[in-house]
Amino acid sequence: MSEFSYAVTGGVGRFTFQRPEARNALTYAMYEGLRDVCREMPTDGSVKALIVSGAGGKAFAAGTDMTQFRAFATPADAHAYEERMEVVFDAVERCPVPTIAAITGACTGGGASIAAACDLRITDRGLKFGFPMARTLGNCLAVTNLARLCQFVSPARVKELLLTARLVGAEEALALGLVTEIADDPLARAEELAETLSAHAPLTMRASKEALRRMMKAAPVDDADLIELCYMSADFREGMEAFLAKRPPQWRGA
Image (cartoon, rainbow, N blue to C red; front, side, top):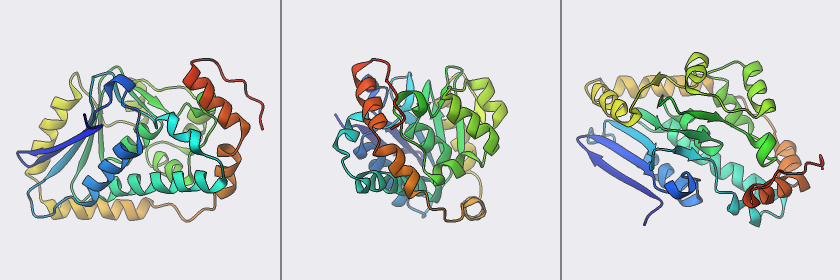
């Protein structure tokens, strides 16, 4: 079975992460499947909106599948990973049609980054949104991902969320602006919203999306030393192995 699915019905594209047994933990194939759908999105009116969701009802996506990090050995591996991820998130932001994240349950790490790159985010009341790497894995967010979060909430609040590594529930996420709406059935509400958007002027929506993307684009910032600090550390290796072994990590700060 494929790790993701994509289909177009009634002018609406539906991309679904299909690893419910792993809380839709994201493999490279899943990331790149979404990237390709967004990059290749037609602008002839055959697709008017894109809905992104996770199968199983328990998670939108619970971050990158950590087994993929075991191959990291050099700083180049860490930088290549972050660059690979940025290509995906940038493709979602640049998608020429409105994108709607229909979120159920856990939306963490890379899943939260994908949701943040979407135009609209609808969640159920079981939401757990955040970036818990300070207590789970010991890696860090690239500057471009931090900039996306700061579109919705203040840098001070982003700092608090990252340092405490806590996960935000639905009501708080709505108050902070991390999600745009709470619904009993996020996918059904996303379908309804996609139908509304389908009746709007596509060029107006595309121009609005792109103008805002250009406005919010972070100035180039060199974060190479920070990426290497985390991904090349013994703590990162310990966090990954501890998570996979379901035991608490023993941080050393090295």
